[in-house]
Image (cartoon, rainbow, N blue to C red; front, side, top):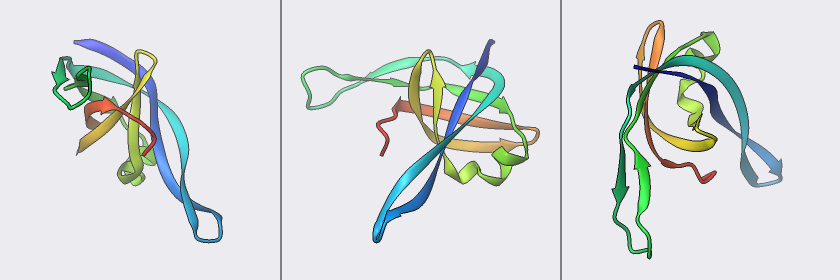
Length: 105
């Protein structure tokens, strides 16, 4: 089982000007284990297929992670931001399922 150390991005909505809401990102670092490490190509209508991760990462969570788990948007692995597609709270850990690249949306 591979070890993980990296950032998790939390997206909080804030009003940047009247009627305009944008994600404000806060990153926190966590340690854990990569419990599933696989990649797959997803066919698309683009010239090149998209690479998706089907990874599961189990991180040791803190009070901040538990209270803000609904705001988790991405995890940084190998220098890239990957979307968190689902999560499971298994105290004292949170298991994150990872999908495609995070594009900020």
